[in-house]
Length: 71
Image (cartoon, rainbow, N blue to C red; front, side, top):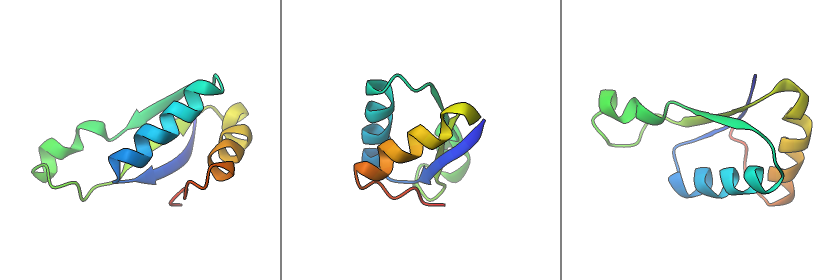
């Protein structure tokens, strides 16, 4: 798996995952439950991971929709 993007903005995560689902690209959200360790203040970014074979296509989908990949 490769890291596709990272952000601490939940609206961008929701939009990006909706786009990936629409293109039938499998993904995995990492660091979703890190707020327990940080005290729920949202400073730690969440990451979206995709399979290596889907990385190029997923990157193109997000960039076409003006999503900053945060890398």
